[in-house]
Image (tube, rainbow, N blue to C red; front, top):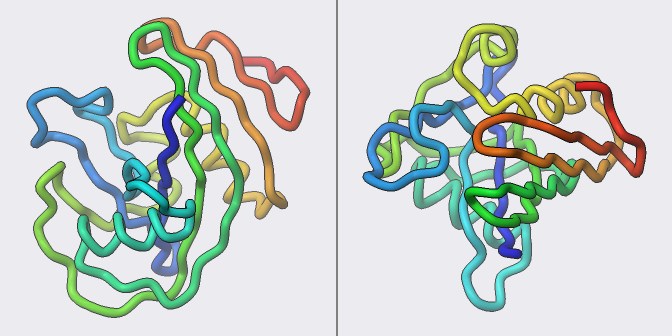
Length: 157
């Protein structure tokens, strides 16, 4: 099990999204995701998120919320605990990202027309509903979502 942080930076009705198209080996290849990455030694979820946002975007966050923990279980990529954040305050200028292309996308477009993981649709809806802190487990076989459990209750998928 490894730990990561992911942040969806908000600007009005848009999210800053990262189109993962630059890395040779990437479990998220071709997908649109938020900004984040793996913990470094001794980092907290918040420290990891702030560092990753700065490294990947050039932005410095001034307002954010810790929204939940998403556990990914995959037969291809192993296990991951992702600490999920949203941010609505930031300073600085966007820079080029070595992992993909950054773009502001309408929240409705992210859910309906961008290639994202099926499980991401679940937690993005929870964010849109402003659901309090949640625990979500997503089990994948290959690229297929086969099970989703929200706060201990199995979801229909």
